[in-house]
Length: 316
Ligand code: AMP
Ligand code: AMP
Image (cartoon, rainbow, N blue to C red; front, side, top):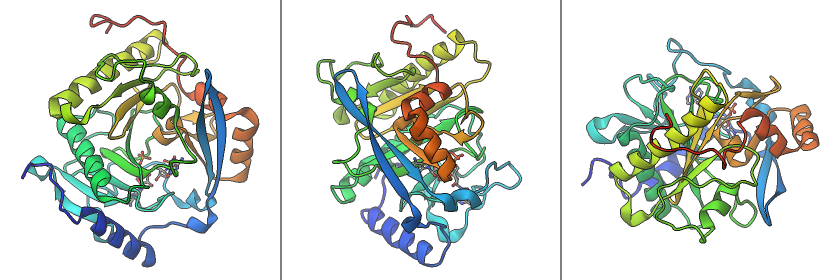
């Protein structure tokens, strides 16, 4: 068994524990109150989706955690899915106490590590292994992704290192621009050079993953390439912080460098947001995004498209 193996009944345990936690109100979720609206966004001659979600009950969620009141130091036992996971048992898997979709969970480091650090080889491969296992064990209609908010302007709220896992909206209704880029077969699948669509107004970098080639080293190499490109964009735009959002599916990794955590000081945007899943905690914000347009909102909290920016190994 590899250090990254998960039990064969992982998905069953995940579902049962989640149901229990929800019944006992250990996770605070008001699914009936969720309003979802899916918008069509033209990307060149193709169309992608952005989903706007409104959930007012999230107002109870803590805005900012700190090292002293750290929910991931000793997670609630009722929220713990696996207390020990990964090489040297360096991780835990726990439910998000304030989910917006059911079974939303996190991989957290057992020892405190700061959220402002890039993902390590083990953190990347653990995240990939969780996704691969979910793809194997969960119902075929569920598509899972992992996300990581890194840095002061990334929209993260907790400083203890955590990668999150969530299902995407149903396949027939939602396609992220990242899916469109990944499916564009005119670009070789084995390219380690990050892809960026010039029709999207903000800088973003995507590398496809080929299941048969994925190991710890391949993930780390791809991550470093995405990171190097993102750092270069931050530098070119005179940003004096390192903030980015990172998304992983079993098919690709996406990184989006960030300029600002909140749109006009009102609406927090994290990795879900830059992936095309924007969360609004009241009607006013929901109406604001619809009026301004979701792509315009994302453009303001990210950095300009950098398709024309030349990056080589000496760039940073
Ligand atoms: P981020 O906002 O990216 O830093 O993610 C931190 C996540 O932790 C948020 O989505 C919160 O909903 C979640 N969270 C906050 N407090 C707790 C807690 N006590 N147990 C589990 N998850 C929590
Ligand atoms: P935030 O306040 O943006 O950190 O998010 C509150 C909670 O919802 C956290 O658990 C987030 O990880 C999660 N979340 C954020 N955006 C979305 C979204 N668009 N759809 C579903 N869940 C989300």
